[in-house]
Image 1 (spheres, one colour):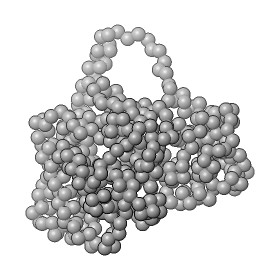
Image 2 (image 1 turned 90 degrees about the vertical axis):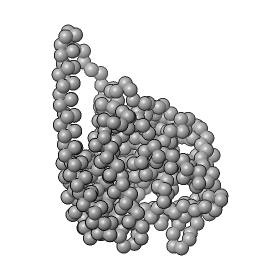
Image 3 (image 1 turned 30 degrees about the vertical axis):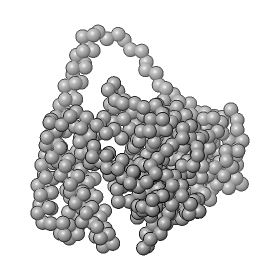
Image 4 (image 1 turned 45 degrees about the vertical axis):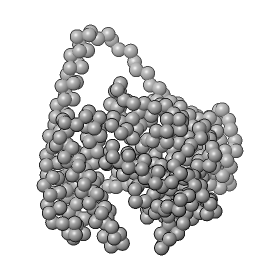
Length: 454
């Protein structure tokens, strides 16, 4: 079976407490039995009740089920089973036969995935045309209503932004969190959630420890203003730029509608899953998965969402190579994508990867991307022959020319120590998220292997 590594299992944990409990349950003696085949992993563990907990993991589409009462996905039992398999490097009992409770679940999942539409009675071409016309009119009406809502929200935002700028940047720390939250809430009501997120980012500025907060505040203001002006001139922009502007505002295309379109770009490739960033805000979990096409050299961002702690089912896991077909959302600089067809997971890099040999080259490439799309502020990059250095209380990555770029403050000390322990202070090829003023290390590329750092 294609087992997950310890680092990849960590990525699946919904929170720190589940991670700790899962590690505690990774001891073989605690499991009554555990087995697997090509599609599913399962095991039974005796809990406090009369009957053992029955835990299952769909290996191909990364989904979980457990008979325990936990509402977390995966629960500690699912994590414990995966940690156990990782420790044994996949060397566990294997069988084709599955217990009934396992096959029932897997067969239902398979039936749902490959559901065949029931044949329907023949419908006349006139009826089909009438239904299509009715649906088109209803869609046009919804779009018009949405446009008016967004337009009203942006008009209010424009006045708010002018007041903020006229008062001066130095007044921003005095505004307080509610000031920005109220404006963001009105934008959410106007269905402009992307702009709401930009307004909320004012509250993430560190006015005490970060002495360049004015620069970051000005960047936020500039991005908001550029979106406002772009929306006000939307009909003057090229079609693909219009799509990008609407997406940045929060006017997104539903995944189902995207996959139904015939004009979207799709790329089938072996996609290296570079890493994952997960944020939780007001009950909404957003999962960012960064991918790199080994043949196409295309970069991709796959976003997944869930609300109220519900599980996110995705076939792609950080540190793995997914053979898949990605569908890209329309844009003049397509980056965001969704998995259209997942084929398999590959154990090693089928293609060698080469990257930039200096930070100057990385910066030049990133600036070219920024010139095309001013709202892209994070770009996955491969930088070769860099080492970790410590200078004036901060960690940096130094290239062969001794140019340094700061490691982002969001990267915790444990991750930096792990990078130092693996490299021994030597230069390596590193996948990073480049943010112009700092970087987030994601993983090490060595020959035909990729070692995830997080």
